[in-house]
Amino acid sequence: MSPDNVSVLVIDENRIRASIIEAGLADSGYQNVTLVHDMDGVAEHIESTHPDVIVIDLENPNRDMLEQLFVLTRSVQRPIAMFVDNSDRDVMEAAIDAGVSAYVVDGLKQDRVKPILDMAITRFKAYSRMARELEDARNELADRKLIDQAKGILMQSRGIGEDEAYRMLRTTAMNQNRKISEIAQSLITASSLIDVTGEAK
Image 1 (cartoon, one colour):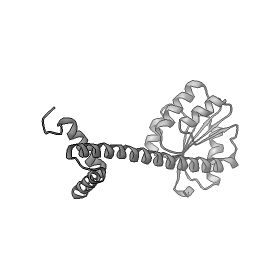
Image 2: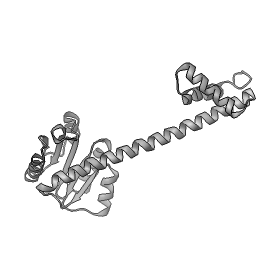
Image 3: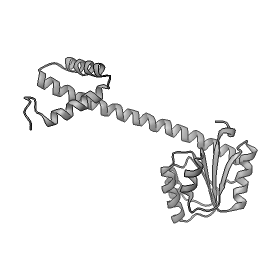
Image 4: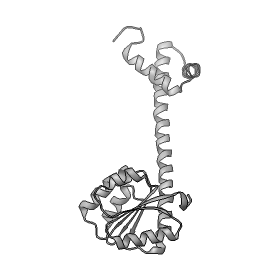
């Protein structure tokens, strides 16, 4: 991801500290940078600017401010780097759980901005890939359960074996240009409404 093509939103109430981040970004080739100095209305700023990366800098955040930001970061599917001066393990874990990709304590220096931003982007991509793979695995397992249930219905109603039941599902799916799991779901739904003798339940 080239810095020229990356938009960065910097959230920092302290203008001096924000300028340090901005300078570090500029030195690294990040030119599309938006600074926000007011924590109120942050969600609106994110919605209006659609940043690729978010940098949040907090000197001494209180619990209320952190909880507000963590609620926000959970809903924002973007790399987030957070700088704080003071922290504890519970806050750090809460930040990571909320989706913060890089959590840096007492590390705001101009020359550290780029590597930390790079780390946030890399971690976000890795996490997103893992999340997609996990979702795919869950969907595959759910589909297999549907297919197994549909095969059971066919085996019982038609008096056929498992292989033949699967072939019926597969052939129907091919003929209708649909997924086997969709055919299985339709069969399961129909079976729940009508019993195997065709009588309404």
